[in-house]
Amino acid sequence: VQLQASGGGLVQAGGSLRLSCAGSGSIFSINVMGWYRQAPGKQRELVADITSGGRTTYADSVKGRGTISRDNAKNTVYLEMNSLKPEDTGVYYCNVWDPRLRVNYWGQGTQVTVSS
Image (cartoon, rainbow, N blue to C red; front, side):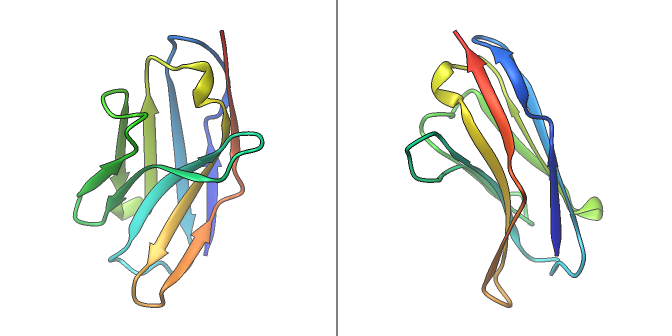
């Protein structure tokens, strides 16, 4: 399984971004896809995730500012964030949890930098 993330970059505070992550390989149809981020010197944390049935979970820090969605046919997950803050800066990793194999797959990460 490979996950290819895209869409990061430098954004001004108050701006918006859209991240995409396309999965390829043998991905079980029932899974959880999500986005995590890691800021310098901090642990990786969940930003948002979405089940194959469409149930979503958001970190408190992004509630109301972020929207996660997915295209099951394309094994692709998206994250849209607006009203970006400097504290949103970090490397964003996409993730797929396969409950059948109990395995986590990770993408390579994409840098998001929010300037004040």
